[in-house]
Image (tube, rainbow, N blue to C red; front, side):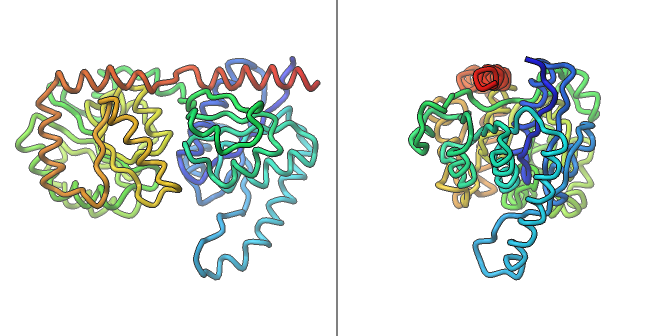
Length: 369
C-alpha cells in the first residue's frame, strides 16, 4: 500500500493530543514519505506543541458545548458550521487515505466530514468510560482502538474493536537520565519529585504543594520539577524563589521525556494518557484523580494502579499538606518500595500500542481498497 497522507484530529488537552502524536510518529516510521496533518484549535494545547513538532495543522473554530448557560453557546452552531465547511474543503483538496480521531470536540466534525466524503475514519479512545464524541463516532468509524478492555461494553459493534493500550510518544524513549539532569541543573545525588497537572495545570495540587515544598527540599534528600500551568505559574515562582536550586518551576513542560527520565516520584492527575506515560517510563506516582472527570474514569485509572501496588491514590477531598508530606517522605526514603512500584508499573505499559494501531489501519485499508 502506498501512503499519501493521513489526517489526525484530537486536541484541547494533552490527553487527546499526545496519543495522536504517537500514532503520527508510528505512521511516519511505517511510511517514511507520507504526509501527516493535524486538526485543532488555537485555544488547545496543540497550538503550543504542533508548531514545535513541525507538523502541518489546520485551525478550526469549533469548541465544546458548555454544560451551563453561557453566551458562547449561542455561537456554537455558527462556529461548528464554519469549521465543518473548512474541513470539507481541505479534505476534498488533499484527499487523505484515512482520518484518525483521538477524542475531544475537535474529532467530531473532522470524522463526520471524512465519513461523508467516503474517506476511511478510525477512532482511538483513552478512557475506560468513552467520551460522548467517541461513542457517537463509533457508528461510522471503520475501527475502534481502546485502551481498556472494560471499555468494550460501551460500544455496539464488537467486531470493530481492538484493545491496544494507549499510544506513547517516541520522544519518551530517547532521553538519557544524566543528560536530563544536566538540562535542568539537577543533582544526581538527590531524588526528584515531578509535580504536574496536565497541560492546563492543577490548582488544588499546586495549592497543597506550596504549603510543603520548602519543607520537602529542606528536610528530605529531594529536589522538585514543577509544571504549574498558566494560572498558578507566577505565584509558585515567587513563593519558591528562595529554593530555586532545588525547585525548578515551569509554566508548561514540553520535553516530558526529560522530565520523566529524571523523576523518581510523581504527583499528578490520573488521566489515561498520563497513566500510560508513567507506566511506560516506570515513574511511581501519587495520583490525585480529577474529581469531575466523566464517570469518574480518573479514579478508576488510579485505583487500578493502586491495587497492583504501582501507585498511591489520594482523592482530592482527602488531600492535605500533612498527608502529602508524610507520603512523599515515606516513599522517597524507601528505595525498595519505589523499585517495587516501578516493576509493577510495567504491567500497565503498552510500548507497541501506536505500532499495533498503525498496522491494523494498514490491514483495514487494504481490505477496503
